[in-house]
Image (cartoon, rainbow, N blue to C red; front, side):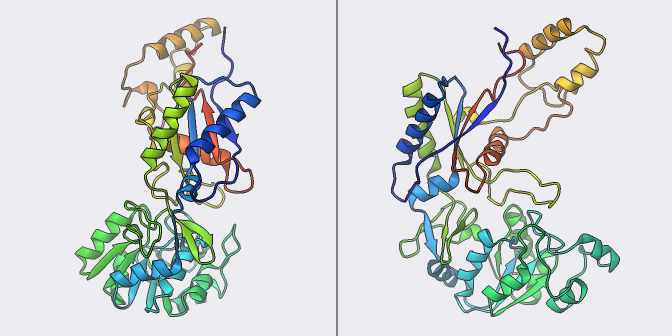
Length: 393
């Protein structure tokens, strides 16, 4: 029978998950109940995706600002330069609260006109009008206020992040530059706070003579007085949990996805794939925010989700080879072409317009948009038909 539906994505509601809960059992039960309630059959290559927040909460992977302060004190003796933090109440503000608790003098270096993930500090048109070159000019707090005003609020959140960070860290100075080496004018000890550029920034600072260089991924890589931790990402990927604590990115994700996959396969007798997902990787066209503030989209996934798509661009074929072919014949040709495509189409004309992103990045973005971060109450996402194509019946 002809199939008329391709990929289907369903948000799955779960009970409230708390520290110490058996998340494998909770997710399994929630998925089965949801599918049974709608009389949905499981199929090979269905995907169960679980938000990282749920995994970290079940693990009890939390740390408070005192524990952050202690680890910072373990690493730094004097003034600290904080290079390229993102503008976020949820992500960086609570971390800054912990760093400020050390009592050390802080120099915060902000990139401009926006942070690494696209949160804007200012209107780019004003840079042009004032003839300010963000690639070469360093601005002080006074110059920033002179050019852009005493209060500059974020378009979406309505927060003045310069003011907020100054209120959190009373003993700090804020500087504006896109050259990380600018921080060395104020201190030789640096904490790199960027997410995706962190390794290159660290190396650049070391080469320029910095004495101590750490990143947020180096903080809380092991427990501090019983805290949670993440040996690979440290504080990266953490989120505000309360006014004095953060929930860290989950650890031991491979064990979780394999255990859940095993249980789902035993129940369904189908090849079910499982992944943990965090922020999606996509850009908002209005606010220009690139969503991915986590170090990766998916910190853990089962083997069947490795790799990148190997797809033919139907639009390209339709506008070239099939341009003057009747519809029935065109469908037959296209299905035959897809069924017998090469295992690696990289660089061929047939792929023009496709984007070779990781499958887990694509799926994670899809799931993040589905579950949202608000009150939907669907931290698990069930995806069917993602690996199907036009030739599948």
